[in-house]
Image (cartoon, rainbow, N blue to C red):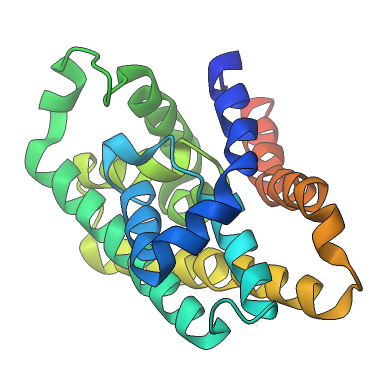
Length: 208
């Protein structure tokens, strides 16, 4: 489903995410979540690791967890909504677009196949799948999913992912002594656990 280049880029995100959060602050976090949630050039951004690490830093008093959860939820929902609107307005023309530095047709096709197998619940499941998460709302717009249906799944997915991931980071940071010594392996574990349900669901649908 994902090429080696995507996996390597995904793992490499973990090394720079702490200084990124400390430098960017709430506005930077909100922009990254927004872009990765629905702008086709945002597929390479560190969504899962960013949210978990931001929650961890909130437990160390670098950020306020309540403000963090609010902005990440809103950014996730708004990002998906923009992606949906973009897909609905541009539609099939995207599939005729040539690949460029910020656009890769294969990612759109991957999300389209996932959407065909899983329908509207893709909007929730895709939250935990890098790359698919960015293109799923665009595909929903291309497929002209009813907006009422889309926004319902969007709100659920935005809450589970946008609030759930930083909350997990905050909880671990608050309860495990010297957890910062193990931050990198914990981030990797959390991210892979977060995408496991989506991968399992995809494999079950594929082998039916």
